[in-house]
Image (cartoon, rainbow, N blue to C red; front, side):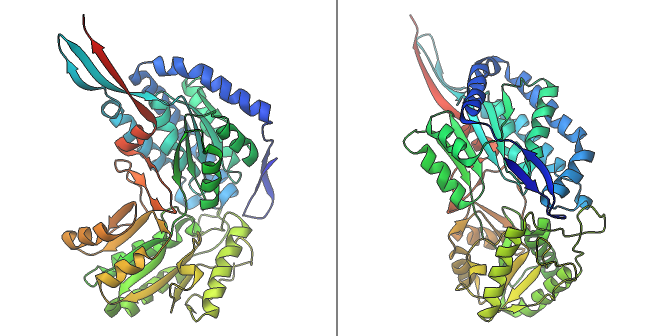
Length: 455
């Protein structure tokens, strides 16, 4: 049984039975049987049906927003995820023709030589709860457009998301067998992967979850895309706009209660601006309103589950015991459970877990640095590599710094944004693969060469 415990009040918000192994295998067989006919449709027809499904999700937004608050705690004032959801799907639809086009090497009287991109077959998408619609659509839309059938396994914290997406896409005309939402436990999921049920598996989640996916796929030669943990840094250079940097980096650290894949978890500031930056950061956080996410004046809601908040509290307490300074007094609404005071820490160092392990919550450590070399060394002193944010008006300086940072994406003067035209990727323990952009289509298809000698 999959059970969603609402972070609002600890009540059970939704329950769903998981499929038995035989039922799960039947889902895959239905997808496999339907995929060829779906791939045979003209590309423009697949695009039309997928985008109609996207629009149907938008039509549900008034119901989706409070559902998300109940399932994972994001305040209703932020209006859900449909803006990013539709932007990402729309961009992938727009570039599909070029990204999937045949590469013609020769078409002469003697030979036709061409490379085509063909779908993998059935794609498994394992989506997380923190941005449950946007993270799912990153793969669902391009996988379907490319001619794959899709099985979506959503996180247990957000079980209603997959149901919403499937019903929206089916109502738009996407065949039910081509896009299926499935409630699967970990063992059944691993068994399906090990049985070569899928041509490609895309997973977004924890490092341990990614390792489980890799173990299940070992020896099957199944393609795997992984976006795992992060400990994303921000660097405020000596020539940065401090107001803009503080506003954006602190929002990047605290929005969604810090539960963002590319959330800012550590900040390095040119030493001459350190005190001023910290003062601005503390002022911003003290202005937050922690509370019930269904109330319109709430600016920061509970974490998705008490156990996530407990981990952030543990990292923070350990850091303070090791000499860190906590700048934010405990909010009255902090209940010791899912409702957690957002925190700014100074006097931190890389011996502390809060500066090394993923926190995935509303806490950020801030350190002064002497120069670019010191900042780069600290930014790279991490097991993770998803994004980094560099703050300077000097593009050449930012790009030179970016060239030396071990990460998948480098931002200049912004943070915590996913541009669907750029490849979403990581390195080190953040995982491998690439979503969105032209490269996303390349990962969701395989090249097939045609060497035709004419008579």
